[in-house]
Length: 176
Image 1 (cartoon, rainbow, N blue to C red):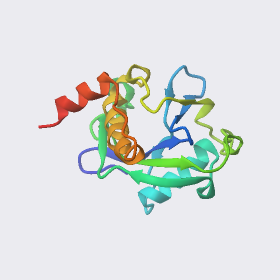
Image 2: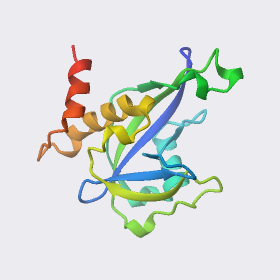
Image 3: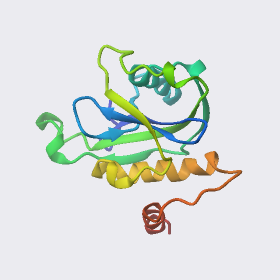
Image 4: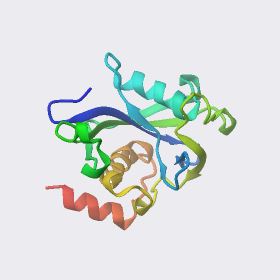
């Protein structure tokens, strides 16, 4: 399911613990780390897709989390052409995502990376909220930066925390 511009609707999940650290998942059989994310199926709302992906990738159910916020609009990234299957190259550009900020109200032991028959991650850890952007695959960095920056205003509204310089520089370039 692609929109007119060639973007697949998707959700991204920033899951935080009580120390405001983020869930960081290691992609199965790879050396790359990322947040849970996944496509929105036909007829699903972004929230329904988020809960489905949360269970499939992390094994958490709605009772294990509290929704703290979500991005106001879609955040987009283009997938490099050489990563796109040949038959999709003329129509598929990338993903557009609604990002959710969730608080884990369950326990770490509730996380189960084998909840689905097609696991995405083979390891996980808690990481600083401001994940180093260089740890994110290059074509997704700006979306991660945008999502973390926008949702930080919800998470840290009582005790604001300044983002690292890398986040500030990217934000200043984007703002008019």
